[in-house]
Image (tube, rainbow, N blue to C red; front, side, top):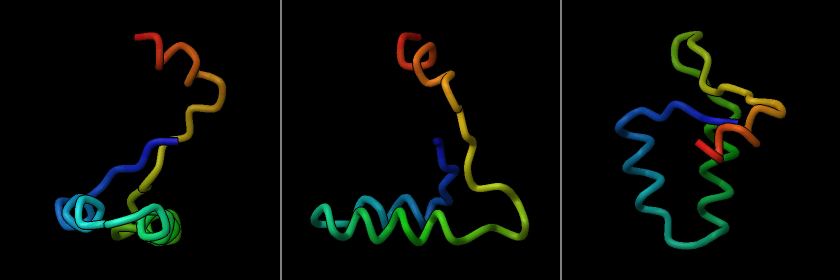
Length: 53
């Protein structure tokens, strides 16, 4: 799954200091949305081909 981050979210992610903070950040991103715009893109089984590109 891929997530689209705003510049503010990117800064918040880069400011995390440990795994627990990263997990908390991801949980927040998964739960939120930007004015109804989708935040994620599921790839299902396509990840196998994508990671080879």
